[in-house]
Image 1 (cartoon, rainbow over the protein chains, first blue to last red):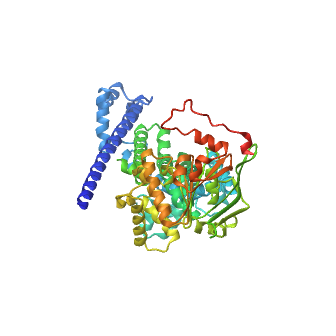
Image 2 (cartoon, rainbow over the protein chains, first blue to last red):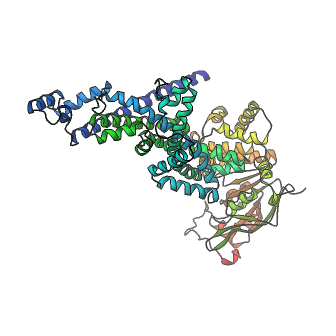
Image 3 (cartoon, chains in turn red, green):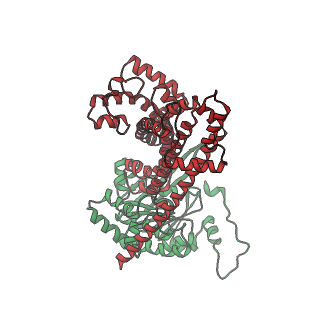
Length: 353
Length: 277
């Protein structure tokens, strides 16, 4: 009897989960379609002639017309979009004429660099930012809180390229604690074969520990800078979420129960503050993954941000659109992930489905 | 027999921009293993009196007293460690609305066993058994389900029973119930009160029942303190409520609706500056 009821419960839970997953899939598909439409239209309205880019500006009119047809530009806009859609779905973003390689290949080469940097940055920002924010909330108005506030303000307001330059000057040029721009010293560049594209992982998997140390030394400064910026934001948000939770009635209940203060803070309150924090961390991560253009420029970091900037400067529309789609997809993916985590962390959302 | 709780000249003060504001102004009473009601209107200091006894006056408020003793322990000098071992184990409190007073991200079971975790040496299985037994004692029919449920999955009445179960699972000596039924439906109120009454009687605990409902307190407690503007204006045996002499208590009594008489227009409660002095 009891097991039967249990089974029924599980079945309906499974069903509702499947239903929700279906709903989520439709939403994601629609969002992605919207993203493609937007990038497609941008590609049509920018004042860059894609035909000229192919034939050069000294081509005859007949060559021009031929290329115009070959590119399908004489077809109705809807049909063009349909063709574009088919290509994108098969992973064909066209060819970059800056690098003369398929866009997808270029992105596969540059994105891991950004992924590595952004992941290191968000790890630093989260692992330090959450405890700092929690403690600032607990010590509200005291010295620690004030110091964090000032550091956060600097993090918000100082231009990152300036901090990056100062960082390079101090830690690389003066003190020599870290390696300079780039992902790895040129002497190691050909020692390792590219597998995941993540330098730390590749060197570690191949047992090239010297190269690993070198890559880490290159990574640490830009990652710390990005980490500092997300720390400023994450700690600020953690502080305000925690202040909100610590003022709730269930905290008084916990005190009445004689629960030790550390547990009230780190278990009762933080567990509840974690729900909105997930979104904050996911969005910070997404921002870093978009490619921190300025940081990547200063550190000559061959990531998506640098690639996108270069493509923009040389009017390489295929590359720009391709990168935009990747960035958009990453954003959609992280949003989806944070929604799923939300449901996992908050029982009120979990069961409502 | 020495009283369970002695309160003498209890004062709670909050700093405000216009100087300190005293919300509890010299409350004194003693409590044995009996049921004491505290009634008064909003802002009369009844809830702050309850919080102060638990040492939970919210900062920046300050509590002072000539004497505040619980079972021979001077609460004014209790260390944080002493408080932690008193609260939950010997002193506990049921609050108004289970919607807010239960942690929304913990199951009822975890919240109940957490109480035992810090106040009893038990194995995990024993804790679960004790928690389930306690849920049964507050007349929850399917304790297994409630044990695994999150607070939002329970009705208000169920939530408040779970709250009472949690606060009594360690068998404390004194329970403070701060408007424990005010957030509940009228039909559920009586039932929750009956459960609370039986548990308190059976275990011979002291109870401080804080409410704004004079009649409820009168029917439920042995003794009643009437508070006004941070002071006790009258102390009565519950049976003698209609013999109250203080004009404020009389005023409160007169405001009660009566079934056999149409008292319109409803009397307005008169307040006198002199009572607060």
